[in-house]
Length: 444
Image 1 (spheres, rainbow, N blue to C red):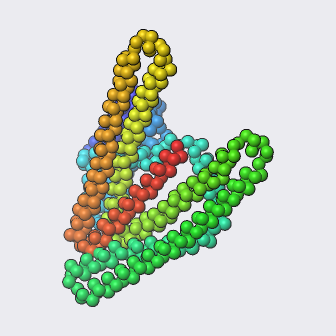
Image 2 (cartoon, rainbow, N blue to C red):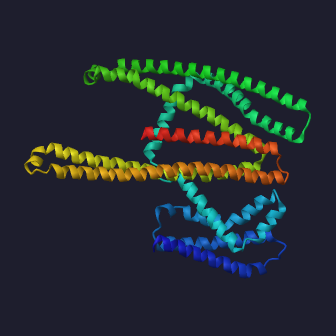
Image 3 (cartoon, one colour):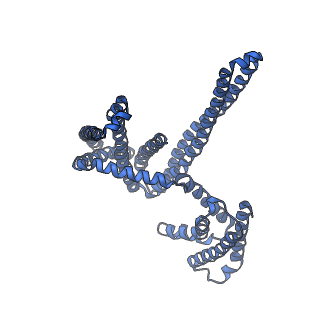
C-alpha cells in the first residue's frame, strides 16, 4: 500500500469515528458534563486511531518520516488536542473553555486540529531532524570535554564575568520597561515630575550598563588572552616531546603553522563563539522573563509565531544550498571541457575542431548562466520571504496586543515595552541561529 493511500485510509477511519461519535455519544452523557464528554470522545477516537495505525503497520511499509512512534504521536495529538486545550483555557477563561468543549464535534474544529498537527509536525521535523550521525555526536562530546578541561583553571574569572554580565543585561533590559511607563504617564497626563524622575533613572541605568559592560569585556578579553597564551605554550611543549622521526617527516613551516597560526585561529573562534553564547543567552533569559511578566498571553503568541517563522529561512536556505551545489557542479563540467580540450590539443587541431570545442564550452557556460539566474531568483525570494515573515510577526503582535489593550488586560505603555523586548528577542535569536549556521558550515 502506497503511503499516500495509507494516510487517506487513516483519515477516513478518523472521519468515520468522528461521525459515529457525533451521532451516538452525545446521547449517552448528560449535556451538563461537557468536559467528560470531550475527554471520552478523545479516548474513543484515540483507541480507533491506534487500531487503524496497527493495521496499517502490519500490512504496509511506511516511509521513514512515519516510522517509529511518529504516527502514534500524531494520533495522540489529534485525539486529545481539543480536550487538553479546553482544560488549559479553563484556567484562564471559563466561557472560552465551555465554547471549545461544546465544539469538539464540529467539522471546522476537526479540520483545524489536522492543520495544527501537520504544521507542528513539519516544524518539529525542520527544527529537530531525526537523522543524526553518531560519529558527529561522539566527536562533539569529546570536543566539549576538551573545551571544559581547557577552561577549568579559569572558572573563577568566568564567574566574575557572569556577575557583571548579569548586571549589564539587567540594566539594558530595564530601559524598555521605563519607556513603557513613560508612555503611560504621558497618555494619562500625570505629574511632570514623574517623567523627569524616569528620565534621570534611565540615564543612571544606561551609565551603569555601560560601566558593567566595559568591566565585563575587559575581564573576558584578558581571560581569553591568558587561555591563548597557555594553549600555545602547551602546543609547543607537545611538539617538543615528539620523536625525531616526526621532525623528519614534517616540514618546519607546517610545524610552525600548527604552533602559531592554528592556535591563533582556534583562540579567536573560541573567543567569538563563547562571547556570543554568553551575551545572547543571558539576553534571551532576561527578555523572556520581562515579556512573561508583561503579558504571558502575548509572550506565548510571540514564541509560536517565531517558531513558525523559523521554518521560512530553513526551507529557502535548503533550496539555495542545493542551487549553489548545482552551480558548482556546472562550473566543474565547464572546466572539465576546457581541460579535455587543452590536454588533447593535437587531436583538436588535426580535426580542425576548434569551433566545435568552443561551442561545447560555451554551452556549458550557458547552462551555468541559467542556474545562476535561478539562484538569483531564489536568493531574492529568500530575502523577501524573510523580510515579509518578520513584518507579519510585528503586525500580528501589534494586532493581538491591541486586542489585549482594548480588553484592558495590558496598558498601552506595556504594549510599547513588549514590542521593544520582542525586537531585541528576535535579534538575539537570529544572531544565535546565524552563529550556529556559520559553525556548522565551518565544521563541514
